[in-house]
Amino acid sequence: MSEKQEDKLDALLRSRRIEPASPDLADRIILKAQGLAQNQTMSLWQWIRELFAEFHLPRPAYVFACTLILGFVVGFNTPMTTTGADDLDTDQVQGFLYADEAML
Amino acid sequence: MAAGWPEKDDQALLALVQQGSQPAFAELVRRHTERFYRLAYRYVRSRETAEDIVQDAFVKLWEDPGKWQPDRNTRFTTWFYRIVVNLCLDWQKKKRPLPLDEEMPLIDERETAAEAMIRIQEQKLLEKEIAALPERQRTALNLCFDEGLSNQQAAEVMGMNLKALQSLIMRAKTTLRERMKSYL
Image (tube, rainbow over all chains, first blue to last red; front, side):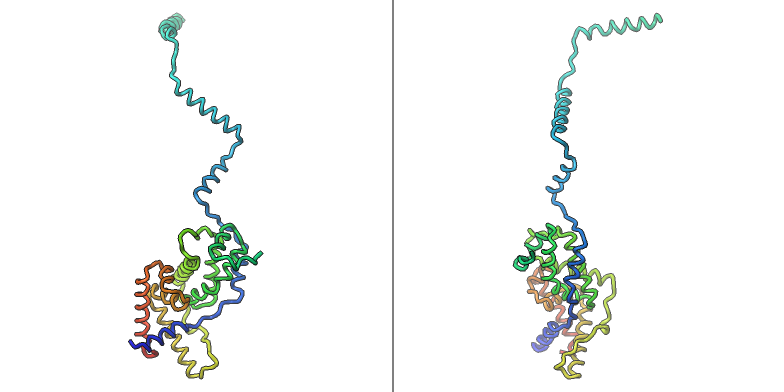
């Protein structure tokens, strides 16, 4: 392919006609956007902060909740100890009660 | 209020748009509408449709400015060319392009009638042949010849390496030379 043809094709490609845009195109776009709200995309950090903000409680409530949690933790971790003497008497008490029921 | 906007670069304006600044958005639109319109027009060959596409692209940017990620080391124009090209291609998939005969030829007053007729014929044939090119070859030509982007910038817009882009342009030009040899 000759250089002349190459140049002619390049010139043709560069001279492709174009219909000019309306002079008010930019203004129309701006006007249209003014009437629309933005969707703000949130970062993960922002999302976490929003989440915590949704569950916002006054400080005394946090103190109360923490005390309750602490109470549960301590309660569940303490072994259920009963006095030995009471355990020994259990059978006798039950026997006495059953005996009373039989008489009735 | 708007006095400081022309000095700000696109990235700075976009950061303001992300904070909801309408003057920054307006400056961005005024700065770039024309170039994106030209690109859209190359695809759709209709002023109304090209304007709609550019408007749609900018409105989407306004509605969801978070789509622009400044840390990706990409220029705004490169990123936005891609958006406009994608919108044009979507439009072409949905609707048939306008027939070339409906276009209004531009007459240069210095030309004789015969010269003008030949030039109009050349333009029509060129548009027809460009429209018949594969999508990527067409995009490469539109970006490099009409928008005057460097090959490197066009490659970035198209998300490919420089050699692949050069190869696309070469193939497109070879096809055009072949099909238009009677005019060249």
